[in-house]
Image (cartoon, rainbow, N blue to C red; front, top):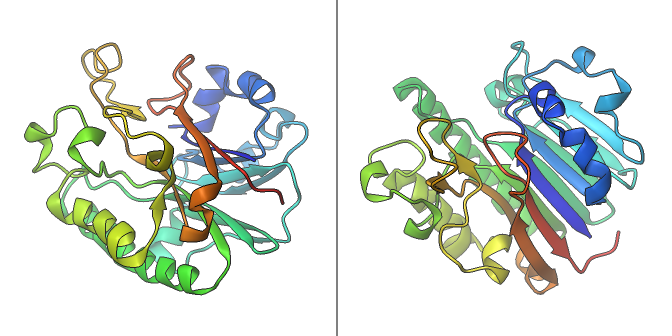
Length: 257
């Protein structure tokens, strides 16, 4: 089973850059998307409903902002479009598809880079999600969380770690939150199970020559419950084409629906 996660930084922009031409080559089972920047009624064209997939969109109330989606080969038993935190749900930050005992989720955590108010909201979402994720672990079912956390976890997940220690996305409190998910709660960073190499980035600033010089951040993740750890087979970040300021994270699992 191949699961892909990607922040599109605008689904219509990604479409113009060839994202939907690439999908048939990929032949993924599930595709989790973040930051659509489009309303559902703007996504009625067949190009936004690729052949062979069931497509589910959760847009933000605010036009041209946020939003998440999932494309699935198999029709899910249930689709959940809210995480239960009203402001986050209004911003279209969560969608979950259920396939028997397997739950696959697309999550878009807020960025705090625009100022203290948004950073405070980011922390509110983090606190809420940690409790929700603890409940998910306690359910006895399988979970794959595909998330743009807007957080780089360790020094090997960011090129310029020294100069970013006071910046949103690499704050001690944010990194400690990820530590708590892994070390205290038991979530598994699927990418790091099979790839421990440093500087495996999934996002690059559009400023300067960040992409060319590989001055990036790994902020896009797939987290799994402990029972799935041994089912992770391969993980890569696809960089042959650029559809966004993020790159797709591709992880293969030994798991059948």
